[in-house]
Image (cartoon, rainbow, N blue to C red; front, side):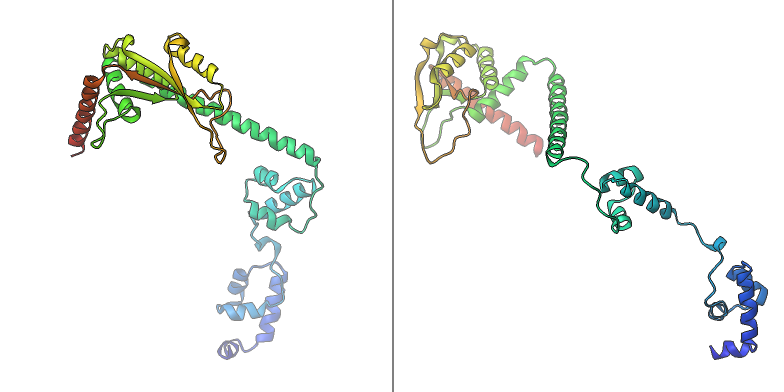
Length: 286
């Protein structure tokens, strides 16, 4: 600094000229060129206390946004509404308007809850529509179902849901249990494909003892096309008071058991078919 003062011996005289130029509206660059002062520290000391002219101030884009945000807040707009209109972040809105009083509520708590519930209903309706549209497109993509398609689906379905023989308990019988009517219909179509006559099928309902047993029996009998009187005796599940059941209501109909008489040979073939699927899958993966 001492060196700079020695270089500019008449510092006070230079400062008077610099101040005059500053007040005349010159920028620092212009003053530097006029006075030939190239040391930034010295130049700053020469104009110390003198504000820069307005024309040298860079306009800030956010200044206009800030003023608009404050104007909207004074109108009673919420942070979310200001953010949506101005396209800025909520944190910026909060910073700009936090000194302003909170707007008075524009609706009662009851009206606010009603609006919220209406919004939730619209959201659920949109989600349900999107869900159904996805399922519709997926169903259409299946196209025509060939005999082989049904055959493969039936083998996998039985091995997932049907009764299987165990090394410690040989049971080469064909018995299938399910509560889904669509699954039951696909399984029966598979048995038809395998030329298993309906006379070899026996049907029985399994259901909780507190349910409407008669209605369930009629439902399953109608689904498979038989008279309810031909059903085998229904198996009733005892109620455990310590458990909370979720399978209640009018839609609960228990499960349907379908047994194929003289099914040992069919069971062996099913087990072989499934083994073939697994073997070919392992080959593809290998």
